[in-house]
Image (cartoon, one colour):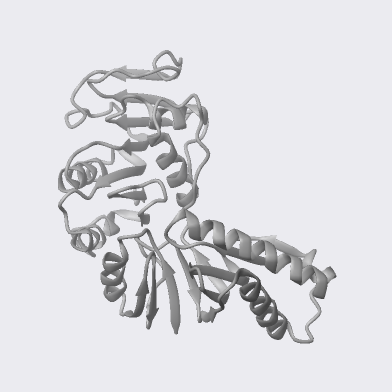
Length: 325
């Protein structure tokens, strides 16, 4: 099966190597996307969205592209009568100009669809994945269309103006992808907490946070009644009892952070975790293989494990998991 896979710009070669780990072969590559065949899984770290059996569409203008896409949609629909909402999504490629291009094509597509199939157009519903009609614009004259999309969950989050730092966005996105987040009165340990972006995210949900960092916290985290700030070495801190959550976003090598996470899991010090790994000079694919190793990695210790390069990640990846114990 052919699959169009999108990613961050400049990560195409890394994604191609990750695809190869799962028996896939890249057949074409562009800015922020790869066309592959034979992929054995959708659980990819560096991928953002996958379109199954994509069809390439090339036209010189926005209007011509929109018209062609309406024709493809109508041909696919045939004589089927839609009675329920149907999913659709238009996304741009690797830069802001293509994002704007995709939005313009979507607008023209819906205008033309409304003229040709008014009732059907009113049932259109924005979605990132599922069965439906999905378009990825890869350059100004080319798009790929598919009738099934798989989203790996990355998305731009809305900044909280009260958050002490923009790192807050990463954790909000990670919770969305993980499908889990701290609940009221759950215990959270935030290693390397300063200035408090991740602690703020947990505190907003009613959790009790132990913020471990020699550095200072900023308001509103600093004086929050549910936060305890321990100005001590995060690598030496051990909670008195198991925490519901371990959060960790520290500027250290991924090997050091992974070793710390293994210690917490081996000693049953946390139930769930969200840990950010700075890639630095590490080989991203070797790092993934180490994390997922069936004996020495995190996989044997977790009933749930997700690894993603988030929308808000830069040269880093985020690991989310739930312990077996």
